[in-house]
Amino acid sequence: MQVFWHQVLSGLATGGIYASIALALVMIYQATHHINFAQGELAMFSTYIAWMMLDAGFPYWAAFFLTLVFSFIAGVLIERIVVRPVENAPVLTVVIVFVGLLVITNSLAGWIFSYTIKSFPSPFPSNAWYASSYLSAHEIGMIAVTFGVLLLVFLFFRFTPLGLAMRGAAQNPVSSRLVGIRVGWMLALGWGLAGTVGAVAGMMAAPIVYLDPNMMSGILLYGFAAALLGGIDNPWGAAAGGFIVGVLENLAGAYVVGTEIKLTVALVLIVGVLVVRPSGLFGRVLVTRV
Amino acid sequence: MSAILETRGLRAAYGPTKVLHGIDLAVEQGGITTLLGANGAGKTTTLRAICNMMVRATGEVLFAGARIDGKATEDIVRLGIAHVPDGRGTFSMLTVEENLRLGAYTRRDRGVAADYDRVYGYFPRLAERRKQQAGTLSGGEQQMLAISRALMLRPKLLLLDEPSFGLAPIIVQEIFRILRAINQQEQVSVLLVEQNASMALALADHAYLLETGEIVIGGPAAVIGSDESVRRAYLGY
Ligand SMILES: Nc1ncnc2c1ncn2[C@@H]1O[C@H](COP(=O)(O)OP(=O)(O)OP(=O)(O)O)[C@@H](O)[C@H]1O
Ligand SMILES: [Mg+2]
Image (cartoon, rainbow over all chains, first blue to last red; front, top):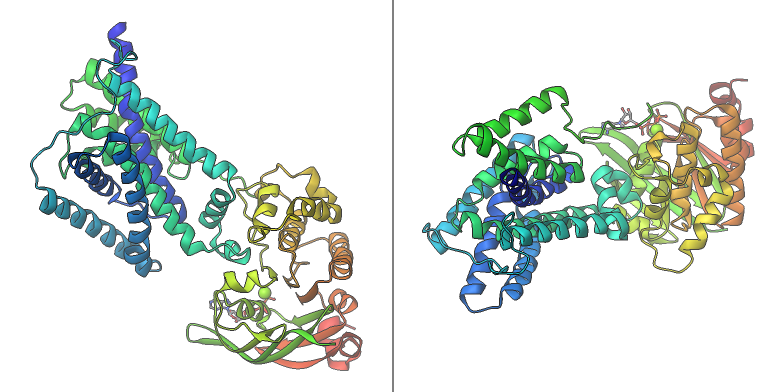
């Protein structure tokens, strides 16, 4: 039984990473109806920035928060410079831009930082008092950090005027302009926030998966699956989907098929769910009068 | 009286399709002006061209004597022009109250809190439904919400696109009665686009008639209402 709970809890820990990536994907999807395929690579690049600062001797949390600031600004700039020009382009063009962004970010990281795998520290010392046989200190810390991020994002969207304006702009850009919201900036802010949330995921994942330019490719896939499972139009569903995928992945790996093809099992389960509920477990069935 | 809004030679096109061919109209300060016309005449397009949204417009638009053509929609709104669009523009996933809060998005003054009660005073039905998801409101309630959202801006000019559309006559009467009250109590000038010519002419002091992108006649509402051809074509008697 202890093994079982260990698997569930550490699944929640990695699930937090998927949840963050899923949330980042959904934030952009809701506003633009595009999946940002480069989300994982941007998170990877942010993690390298953190690594650079740590390498230069910055204290961990200083590097952490500076990386968040960097990621936010980078997200905003990418939206303004790269995404804005294809705003009204056909879907395929946008997909190509995103894939291009993915490839460029990946090779840029490889070029600047090399493809050799680097270790990345955890801010949670392994002998901390909260470490236990169920969860390592880093796993506990990861859960706390990702829940903290989700909570902050929730509070921001739920209770601040800017959060409300961003929700409005995502739902109804025309009406948003008519109440004076600068919709273009809201999209850029959304990219900034998504970049920030992704950066947290990257920095939390790196101590486990190690730092290299391809560190996020698997995670992005899980994040994508999580978003679809939870409901691509519902940020909280997507986050919940992340935790579910994390736990499923672990349980499948431990009890069903072993670690090699646990990804396959998790994805098969998700496809199964989507066949039954195409809008995802928590996808909104829109209530509108016609 | 001076004009709060004036257009001079306003033209508009969707891509290659020219829709407005030089509109000259004026909305008097504090007055209600109506723009009448049949389906497809270009009424909605005129309002869009004034707000510089969704259509490519050329020509002059003056608000309180200053040129606003070419400005971004958001900036035009910030000058105090509230547009209740065709189809009501409800934020359907948000609650009634959140819709109103967005209406006041650009305001930083302390009067906002009191203004919720002010608009609920005009439309008590919305007050009962303040926590309801706006997409689930009835058509009439959504129209009330759209007008309320516009009022939350504390506009100087209200542009209304067919507020009577799809509503039962009794609801239309209620809304028009409230529009008159709003016009008088809020010192807000109104440009009302309507197909319901008799209701609009009764409410307005000035009227224009639009046919295929051109103003064919304009003047005091009473004069337009008694015009022989207008009567036959738009009032049906
Ligand atoms: N987005 C658009 N793209 C292309 N053409 C458009 C668009 N919107 C309107 N039109 C055309 O412009 C003309 C004027 O349309 P508009 O909506 O301004 O008419 P209207 O007077 O508001 O009509 P209604 O009373 O039916 O609302 C119509 O011929 C219409 O087909
Ligand atoms: Mg119209």
